Length: 289
Image (cartoon, rainbow, N blue to C red; front, side, top):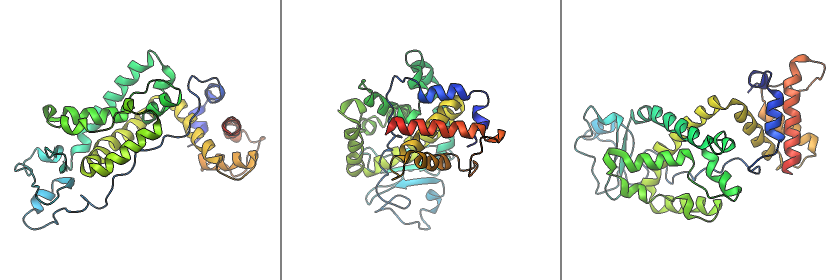
């Protein structure tokens, strides 16, 4: 990332964002939800590809089909590559190869709608990373609500195909039910162990796409805030380095701006934005220490 491209004439604004008084105290980068258990396409207990089911597998991106479960009879129809299916007990699922492109526009529309609504009361929260809102509210001692990423994923599963998967969606942990961020993450870890197929579907095909699409939409809509969070992340990581302040700042700078100059020269006009980035990183490391 080249700060000269993003900052341009707005370096003072970004510096104010990074060092000014915040409504929410600074917190580390968001802790992701736990990865789904099991590896390979579909995990343990799936049918191996055979001549009989090759036609079915050809239209699927992913599936979990334990012994005793069968694919829907219409899985090879023209509509199937752009859809998904979940068993009534949420233990098996199948996702078509064109499902993810189908949901991308819906994710962006949902994100922008939520941001517009939240920005009316809390512009700072609205401009924060979309997968980070619930943790920010926990950290600020406020009543949390699901981040846009998790909210979209949960709601999509709840509403899909006229609500036939409401029962599966209702099993997902809800952030308001937990007293701390760690307890919320632990609930997802427990859920992953108890409902591995459902969690894998939720994580890989709903939550993760929402996280990636919304992150890109956030960076496009809030480029200054995105750069601030990028620097904040490396400033926090620098705290783990057994170095003095200056060396920690050098470490954070060279990771945050890998394409930047190896040595900063105050007499080089092309280094001025990089020097301002170094100063911001130093000040954040001091603040977070």
